[in-house]
Length: 154
Image (tube, rainbow, N blue to C red; front, side, top):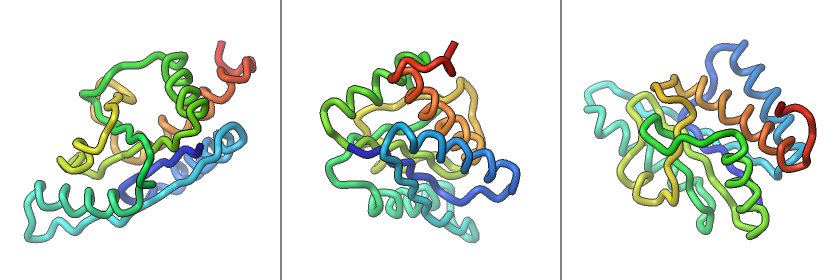
């Protein structure tokens, strides 16, 4: 079992990049973690739909074929941290790869949504993809501490 964070774009802000790296490093102490970044599609002369589709194709190419795919979207299911930890732990117990997908500025392509086994929200509002990645990586770390009964999650 491995966890994959698949995201459109690299963090541009160095402070956010450092925070993301910190939590991804912490999460990797608990779960086998792989980060996949795909290039943002150019928006010049294209519609938001075309941009979404191009980014979706890039993401699909990089997802593990047998992974359960979880789309991160503000319209998804709201989970508590304990619920999220249970989701990740269940994938570990089934020895199944779990890929969390964070879309670009225009969201997720239909092809990504149709591949998803679950859609979850990281917040009830839209987050920039850098912030979504930070929230996700922190929650993966928190899920690890919950799974091991450690005191980080109070």
